[in-house]
Length: 602
Image (tube, rainbow, N blue to C red; front, side):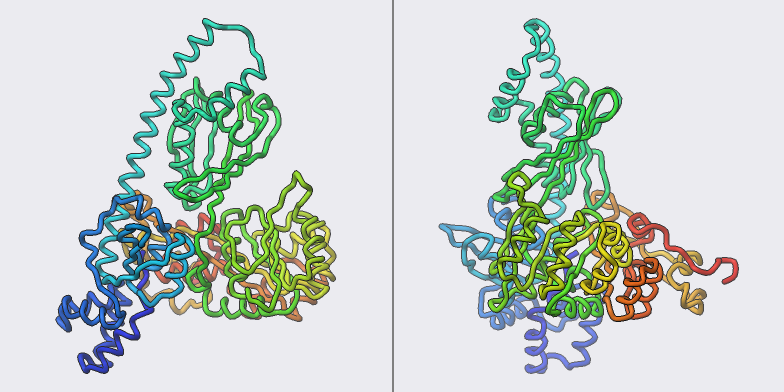
């Protein structure tokens, strides 16, 4: 869903008030209608006959001091042009490239005064754009049609993939016949040489299939690609928005060839099917480099399962509000990154947005007067002014060893990609206790259970209580599709889950929203994801509790009493705002438990 533009609204409103085209009260009413109905202010101005579209274009041209163009004739399928910028940047900043002639890039923007967006365009393209203005209502209409075109293309891609599978099945039969007629025995060196040769042969149907499979995963926004054995076949599933979806079936006759191809690309041992293996590959697509982690696992019948994690480079830094943090949580995080020393941890499962949160923090504290150094696996976004390193296990440059090296580099702030073992944790605690501010991620279920996880790794309670400043726990949930979500009247059990501490509200009517499904969301009912957060500040009381090694439940209760909003309460607020539904929330964080028995509340 495209957010309402705010960068130029104050100037537009100021113009209307100064020229007495509207009163402040009338403008407030239109702003309220805009917020409640999700419509651009300019569209309401025209619909309410306050001003004509032609006059509005003339006014905006004067405000922006640039030409205002129409988007009605801008094509949706000029991919050579549109691929210059990532979709998420265009949607978030409400802009799109409209021409690129002789190295002169022209960009239409709803808010041409957004200097941050212009700088990001320059960074991504290497070109200083010519900035043009456009109406937000036209941009929304253009973007809606563009998304529809992309949806149709994605579906067509799947159909082409299935056709390619059939072609490969026929090719497999031919290959088996040739192999049977020229049976000269198995030679492992020959197999490896053949696989390497096929790796360079882009005309080979097998190469085309595997490459297009990975490209399709990237195009569809998948975070993981699963290749899994089934009875007499393999299936490929993509994890999109946190949920697995079956994409295509691989005929049994082709499974060995495809697994071999993928293992060669990841530099794994193609002859070893008895042990788990880990590798990685790189792919450049649409001028973007993707790191892909590959993991194999032996399963029954001598077959293997493979999972490929697609590590997408972050395109741009956002802010805490756009990530979904509340005002209170933003204030707490500011206190954490303004501290002179200590450890701040971000916890959550894989793919929950921990790196994005850390990059946003680093972008806030980055400056000329401090030395910020990181060690990551991999470096997802290069930040100007920050010294970033990437782990290299083959050179014995791990998270733990890198910490020792970083401490000799006179750092003020250190960011370690992940705390995986006691050695890394010990180094982080040592750095925090010697005057450094340390940021890292850790796998834990909640802010309070992070303490338990650190104790389990071997750290002493007294050192944890002295070094730890705070923990940010987070999850990603799918947002309801704004095009098809429907309202409904909440039942008693749902209201009880939401208002277990405000029983007087149980008898009040309550409207919630649920998923339906439409072409815009690929019939899933959901579009995009947003964060659930809890920010635990470690104050004096919590330090005493940590030193005493009390349970994580006691720590959580104390943190809530001191102002922490739990993941569950954050989720409830998103449900009440109509952004998510119960089904998605309980899929991600589990059932919402009501403390008091239901029957005692009737």
